Length: 148
Image 1 (spheres, rainbow, N blue to C red):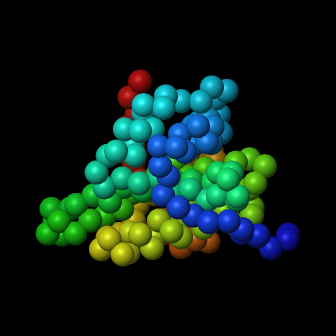
Image 2 (image 1 turned 120 degrees about the vertical axis):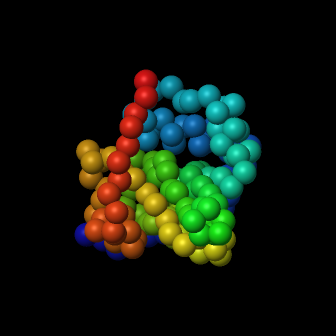
């Protein structure tokens, strides 16, 4: 396998990135129509939440949402939650998602987080990727409840 190639830059997404972000979310959700721009703005405007994206030129190639949340058992020291990690299908295995995750990890560390949590779908086959980035599966169990 060829070595991953990473070009471009990672930055926090802004309202002007809505169209590109929603198109990338459509890849994650496997839907043909992009989501609601107001929903994306609500995420961007939520305190403690940022969406980071890897750009190649002007094109958004990968992104992830990072939440930093205070924890009362740690005297409000935050924990981080990473969600919605996605890379454009044609641009996978080039280091874009890794660059986004490394940025999220550094922002979490700089923000004083004591841990980062990340859940991934069992059917997506991404656990090996997350382990290579440094996530462990032997520390805690991830459990979910889904609502319609």
